[in-house]
Length: 149
Image (spheres, rainbow, N blue to C red):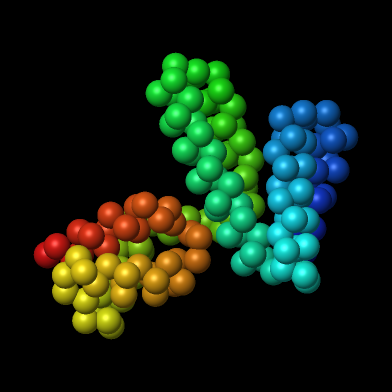
């Protein structure tokens, strides 16, 4: 199986041949970010590294789209959301709400967390188990919910 990095490179070539300028732009940005991260790490990137970078890029675009909407720039918000669609193709399939809820309950039981002060004790292990397959703010909301009961 090809690595995520190789898949992105191949998809960039395909998008260039199809003259899909928007997709080419997004994939070039991803490749540049991957190169920068590889240089900073001084070695090869794993698929986990690539997934983390993509998740971060998606989060940035969601924040940008929200800011554009607040500023009345709908066309820019739509462009950011189109970029999110391209980036999401490379992430593993997202977990369902029930699956994330089950993981949160399992970690709460394992750690013995009982109050909102134990938030950090729960968030770390949950994020490791989820590994980018769910939104961090959604997980935080579920953890707060579980600890408030």
